[in-house]
Length: 176
Image (cartoon, rainbow, N blue to C red; front, side):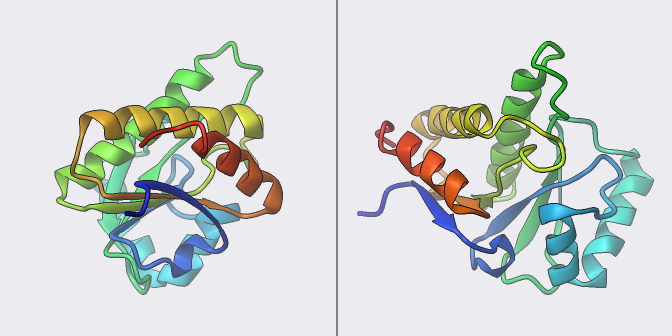
């Protein structure tokens, strides 16, 4: 049996999972890094879906998550979550990052999905220290999975070898 949590190095936009998570900015209208890559791969339908969300609720605050259709992606949906900008660790960044993962997991389950792929939220231009962010990601997901059976597969998608190795090391310490 395959473990429920896995790590892969590659392009999140190519994964055929139910949901991919976008490390979005509050505007939801695309940006750099994984956010820009997801918007480019999904095509104009994703941008239009994000515009509709903004009309209904305005910007997406750090720690929160919203779901849209996936446009041209192989995934069924995209969950957009906004991680915290790293400001030294004294402005509730760890809690906001946990919320970003937790709210994404809950939104996937609320929509009946069983597989989800996460990028390393907040570790790019938002500057969150990579090792600390990976630990929060793995611990938050593991805690969620021990209480909730619906999600069968959680994939952490890493852009580079450094992050891949961080996640691999952390996953060997988990029993989920």
